[in-house]
Length: 482
Ligand code: SAH
Ligand code: SF4
Ligand code: F3S
Image (cartoon, rainbow, N blue to C red; front, side, top):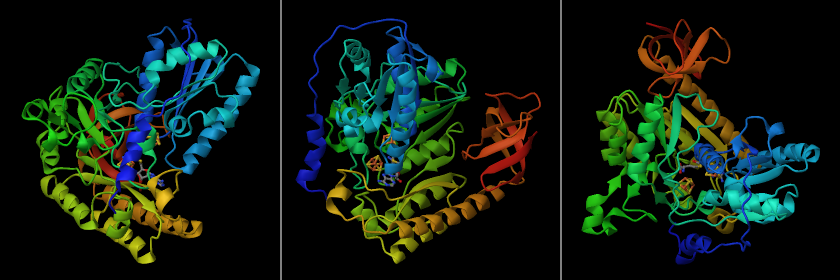
């Protein structure tokens, strides 16, 4: 399915959305703020940017909601259930606000962007609504609320990447950190709300990425995950909206940096710092990226490559930009270039008009790839997406649920099989912390992103430990340090 001009214009229209807001005086006091995050890693990463912006204005972060003067909820809209979770959470926060009426409540992130000022009508306790590109305005918005008004800023940007902001690492383990490399998404998959909540795709200046990674390495971090909705389409060409490489001038081409080149630069920062990235997109994942992965030991041999559906007709309706055959070609390229690379996926069951046979093509693609892990979802129709406007959400709930259960069941078998293959092997594990089940055990991950648990001895978070694997469950490897 090709998008018509009108549909493409929707992305442009979003840029014009503004909400008039009177200028106010800013009030600065050492008040405390608390942030809670939902949704994808990009949202968690954004909360760290928000914390940095607020701290630079003199506010202090707290991990205790009850002592906070300001409570922020960074929200997700990806499925209806994600929004329901946020609503439930807001009703709990409402109770705290009753006990502490001076408390400011702000909704950040994708749900804020999707609902805009309407959120203030529906959730009476909310004082601030701020979208993902407007976080620099937060101190002013707080000032407005201090002046007795509600405040909204959901303007999406063509340039903002927060590249100059050094995120405050909230509640991390001091070992692993996320670094955003792109914002927004231009793909317009028909089921997806992200292009509307996060705006157009922009790549961040590679220099600011390298500086952030070097800084993290100096602070003792051992693993960096590069983040973007579609990391493969990363292309720095001097800033602003995404452009195709072929459309750049010769000078721009010369100065440009694509994802493979960026990853190589990041891998070279420190050979003792592991690199991961998420999310790869099958239509854009190049052999060049795979060759860079194969070349550097500190780039983890693990790719998250969502396929959504194993059927080409459904993929076309989803506007994913690839067919089943193309996806298989990318899987074959991974297996050829890195025979020992783990692969994971995102899968949607019951997209509009999906037949039983088409659903079985999803299962057969899973059989072909043998994923280590998958995130599996029932299709959830989202307001104003292309699918909501063009197609009927016609697969009955029970059918979606049954198909999802079949997908989950198959994935469990594959996950277990993949882990069983690791028994008898030794992996370098980066320790992330003490196991939740026992203080005498540590947990970490191997290159494949599989969780490995082993006896603690004198090891600690941040250590690289060679672990001999002697048993596994369907989700975890167990072993002994050697
Ligand atoms: N940018 C990433 C995905 C971001 S959203 C990519 O393109 O791969 C994470 C996952 O949520 C998607 O891969 C998809 O599987 C799922 N998802 C997105 N919208 C959904 C919807 N409307 N219903 C069900 N699952 C959805
Ligand atoms: Fe959504 Fe598709 Fe963009 Fe992923 S690539 S964020 S699924 S529109
Ligand atoms: Fe959710 Fe927004 Fe991420 S909708 S999945 S928080 S980009």
